[in-house]
Amino acid sequence: MYIVQIASECAPVIKAGGLGDVVYGLSRELEGRGNCVEIILPMYDCMRYDHIWGLHDAYKDLWVPWYGAAVHCSVYCGWVHGRLCFFIQPHSEDNFFNRGCYYGCDDDNMRFAFFSKAALEFLNQSNKRPDIIHCHDWQTGLIPVLLAEIYKYNGMEYQRACYTIHNFKHQGIGGEETLVATGLNRAAYYFQYDKLRDNFNPFALNYMKGGIVYANAVTTVSPNHAEEARYTEVGCGLGHTLHLHQDKFSGVLNGIDYDFWNPEVDRYIPNNYTYEDFEQKIYNKKALRERLLLDAADKPIIAYIGRLDNQKGVHLVHHAIYHALNKGAQFVLLGSATEAGINAHFRHEKEFLNSHPDVHLELGFNEELSHLIYAGADMIVVPSNYEPCGLTQMIGLKYGTVPIVRGVGGLVNTVFDRDYDQNLPPEKRNGYVFYQTDNYALESAMNRAIDLWHQSPDEFQQLAIQGMKYDYSWNIPGADYLKIYEWIRHPW
Ligand code: ADP
Image (cartoon, rainbow, N blue to C red; front, side):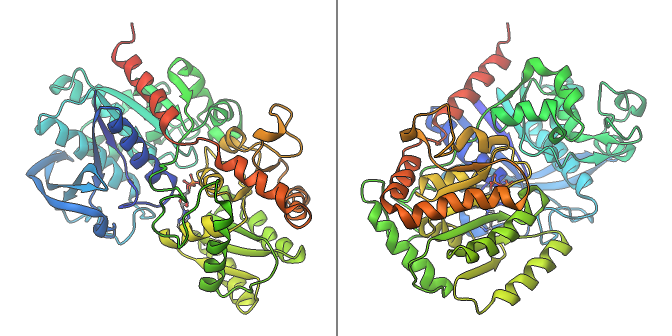
């Protein structure tokens, strides 16, 4: 099958969160199964050019219709750790992708509307006719719309769209200008409830809703989150739309790329290990302590890695730091906040705890350090308010770092409580789960983990090894996506 992924991220060249990991990992798996996969991305000024091999211009003069005129673009092509990627660079005064950031600009909705239009125009003009166009999140929600309403009538009749939602919180809100710019026009038509009209604001268009309505298949990133999105507030207002399109909507658990996230071969950690020589993990713990200037004490290290925002339960992350210290554990945090208030809060916290021998807060994005933390920590805490899938707990499991998670979204599909899970035998359980969002719930799960570490180190090690034996690779999700692709190619 010929599959084109269109997304705003692809790790490690462009990564703000899990979306990048998924686009890369899924593409690799699909290619490994004999499919032809290409990835179309924006050419950001701030992406990691050092991860692209053989970057060259592939299509010099791409003219993208925009506001009734056309924007001149160049398309570059290169390999990102073996994946063939096309980068679209517009030459216009808008400077859409030369902003020193991936997201967070006032005109994000127009930046990614343009990207969606340009990606399809590139496919069309270069005569690429993939069987499947797989697009991701709000940034590319307009692609199924444009495909069905414009490009289908311009030579792309047989292309099918799969749309994956990684986070319902950000849906991409536009207005009539989006329609005019992209050539969709016909405001009265698109502002209907069964088309793109936002479910709450009748004067706004919702890109993600457009993706759901128009794609041939819609997925989100875990089975549990697919349920939650339809029936609870985590669908952020799109529950009814999902309900109307339930026949083509499903949850496919993300995988992680075990070539990249694997303590056996990880190049960023000083000591490689597997569950068979688990004792080697201690050398990574030592290295982590040396790097972050933590005391070499007989204490477990609890880690948090992730964005610092309300989705991730920052109030509990904050509490986890102090509770770990109270319980005689060490804490390492690696996170970045985009919200000024949260950023200021953690900066203040960092200053306050700066000379503490048992804690280190690293504020910012650091891929290399994250590998050392996964390898060196004993436990990883994921206290999210909601979590569509969550990769950090799955990576933690692979590195023998026991997850302590809140029972929401994909965390429910991947972490099984050592003491209370009734559905699995004890030898299959792999972490700790709590449900409420208050401090006590988090504390009780942390206490159980810390106490086991102190009182029964062998049992704790056994729990970590059980986690390492889980297979959360792309093997199963890759096959699931291929089934979906086949289904939308031949729905009869
Ligand atoms: P998100 O909601 O951000 O997509 P996920 O758990 O799905 O959360 O994926 C997070 C990914 O981003 C993981 O690979 C994690 O290691 C990585 N990550 C998050 N924050 C940082 C950071 N500050 N530095 C390095 N890697 C990070």
